[in-house]
Image 1 (cartoon, rainbow over the protein chains, first blue to last red):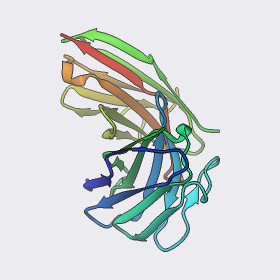
Image 2: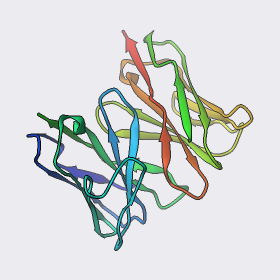
Image 3: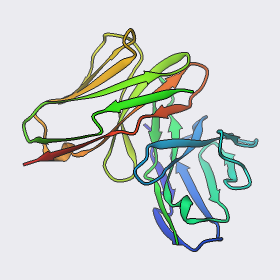
Image 4: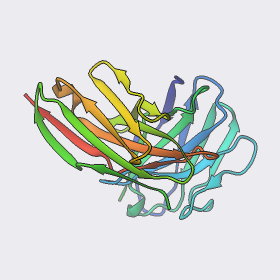
Length: 114
Length: 111
């Protein structure tokens, strides 16, 4: 399986600011995703990060709030913009393996917004 | 809308016990069901099931899918304190790599 790293692993931010989370994979992958896990909840897909084109967002998530970049097949960023306390969550990137469509997750970023 | 429901939501057992975690799903054009173990932040992949009735096994963990009943179970035998975690079940549909997650079962194994 691919080795996935995320930066930062955690952060505490002030309301109204923005944070960019990076996801790096040790091999080229076609599919990368960004998920959110709010406290006590399960994982919710934010968007699919598409290489060379705009991300595909799920219902309830918009590009202005969660801009995503995917400049190549090993790297993606998710920005959480104009943050509010409701954005306090764990943010996870995930990738599909090269076979059988197994999905693997990065270590996550725990974001707290004050 | 796709839905995945897990039960129980939480479970406390003693070391050495055997546990069964349940997952039921309603997924459009169902293709696969995945189980993950989440200890801190990152879910760790356990199994992916696509065929009904075929058990997948890894050490003390095993899982099986029942497409007729739209469900899956995850069994853990001879539980250890290191098995304490949230176990997540997720369903995936054909034509999309999106996963729909259940809320998880929080398993606590006490000595």
